Image (cartoon, rainbow, N blue to C red):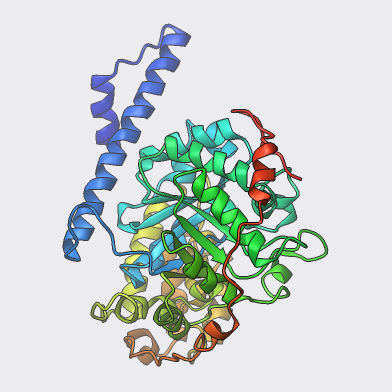
Length: 442
């Protein structure tokens, strides 16, 4: 298909080999035409998926459940596996830096391409330069994501310590508003922000509300993903920032009360589908799950469609899921050059598929050995799967127990209703940026 498509485009777009400028222009035209073709194909498949689920007008199921963006985890390979398990969970990409998209515009497939079957899917981008954010959104628009999310929550030193980036952006809500306007102006899909409930000593509920109010009033942003912990930019590792700052779910539920016109997704500390269900029953408009969806994908994602979206179980076994995944995996080995991706990278998402099951330890030991010499995912599976009992490989999901008490008492500890502190006015006075400049931070 790829070769046929390239041949067709070449017949329509002449390639001028004799002149360097004309050659570059024709190659650029070829890239643009190819990208637009992929966009049409992605939109077509999205409509087909929604028609299969009884949805009209190109709409997907609402993002009641989503898988968090996780660096080095939620790549194309994991998302392919996740979609085989759940047909309706919203999937997020790893964060892609705006500058990467801009500077790799002739190699975008490596960073932005995805199978149309992955819809609904959200691209998360990060950055601190308005011009690059706008360009990145324009380039990403060709890939037909369902939403673009802006990272204002990552506390990693690699992110937050690199100028105004990640969680540090929460210090400047006015400037985040500018960034969101730039992204939205260059995209055809909704935009959203993922943030913490605070940063360092700026962690009061009113300060969080100032951030939400300013960003939403200065941009088309009406969806915020709220990680219910604050971020500490020094003294804690990213892993510690996911555990040490206390969870304050009351802040999230207070936002639902104080900003009824906006949509908020709850993130942080949710480890099983029963807790997702409990949050939604308490009023959450959506819940985002991170490491639980990666570390135990079968039991976390496997219950999403029926427990959250009310559709029947797919009744697929893990053996059937693996067979489908293997076809995908072996088709993309070396797609972007020698060992890019390689067997180890493609097998990585499978390694937690038998979490806590009989035979799991033996399977992982066999996997470690097989990865040293197997050249295809098929040969890897042929060597390792015999270590798992047939009843594990061939069993299907059973109903998930529900615990509706997780958030039952949260209403009793909600903070007082939001009262504007006027801090957003101070942010407005400190513009700090012009188009093309990096966002400033306090």
